[in-house]
Amino acid sequence: MLYQIYEAQRNLMEPFADFAHAASKLYGNPLSPFGHNPFAQRVSASYDLMYRLWKDYEKPQFGITTLDVDGSEVAIHERVEIDKPFCELRRFKRFSDEPATLERLKGQPAVLIVAPLSGHYATLLRDTVRTMLTDHKVYITDWKNARIVPLEQGEFHLDDYVNYVQEFIRHLQGVYGNCHVISVCQPTVPVLAAVSLMASRGEVTPLTMTMMGGPIDARKSPTAVNNLAMNKSYEWFENNVIYRVPTNFPGAGRRVYPGFLQHTGFVAMNPDRHMSSHYDYFKNLIRGEDASTEAHRKFYDEYNAVLDMDADYYLETIRVVFQEFALVNGSWDVISDDGELERVQPQDIKTTAHFTVEGELDDISGSGQTEAAHALCSGVPKARQKHLEVDGAGHYGIFSGRRWRDTVYPQVRDFIREFNEGPRLKAGAAPARKARQIKAAA
Image (tube, rainbow, N blue to C red; front, side, top):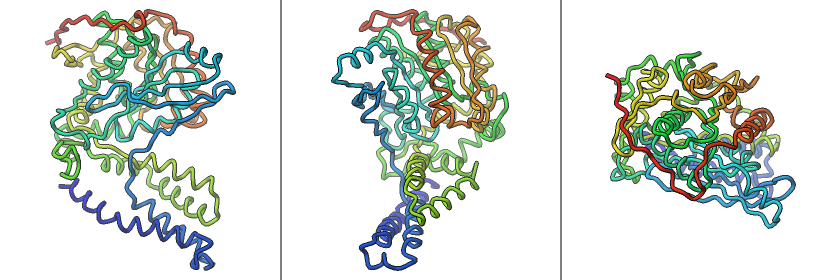
């Protein structure tokens, strides 16, 4: 019922948001008769702020159309490579008219960026993608809003997430021989599971695996996010945060964890910071500081755009990652696409080099949570392991912004280059799978 109430409120506020937007433009236009009023700029700023607070935020676009690569302008064509019911594998293909530039681009490594499915869209990693494109062929998982997925497409489980990642890895291996994988935040856990299962079957695994700010072991330095998941029962989450999608969406009737609840939780973590940000935006509008106001708009266009998650996936993530700690306890069993039950065993990974990145001030995934992957991947030689803690960086700073570009990315780039040679399939060949059942321990 809460979802229906929220939608009714959103529909009710829509005309007021449109009015506020129009009024803001009216009072802000110097050619308007209202624009000659000495208080016009303040009135315009007030209406603009109202509009920003009341409007509905749609999924943003990546909007990466060109890129400067070593002084040459490279065109970017964004396309969907694989379309799954709950995710699109999106590729950013690079084009150049300069033969030397094109030859250099062709020889660069292929990277699969696995974006989080935790409330925001994959466009949250726009800066990650843009930076990676300067030296890599880039693909990203673009997760769909569960409320637009019709019921006939079935449910989506954490196991399905793991299987999607394996399918995408195999796709890149079939095209390029092998690839590198980067996971940011939530997907560090299912990505590590996906690569572990591939190793256990004897499949060729990715050349490198970079894990950034994720809850590999949520018991270490638990944050407010971890504590909520740990201190409430599975039944509490099922009874209090799961709702059915209203009838005005394609996914009507689907059980989901609504995006608006996740957004409320995000804001509640730092309410003073958001209030201060909006007040600064109001003052900057009055002063006419266009650069600051545009930066505010871009940030909140992304931050306020949220998606619904399928209930089964969300609840299983709570249970497996934050309550049972199944990955670190060695008790996680995943159902494969073939319907077989397989045990996740990170110690089976032998050849995939791995790099963990944490932010010193991360309030989402605490210190040591991501670094825990090294102890789990005991089969990987120490020389093929690396860890980085970024001084002064919060959660978003390790994959977006100045610290990402100046501190983290150069080390990720160099790590990928260092281990770009290793087990490969013949380019264009379909990766072979060893179908075998790994029985769960009693």
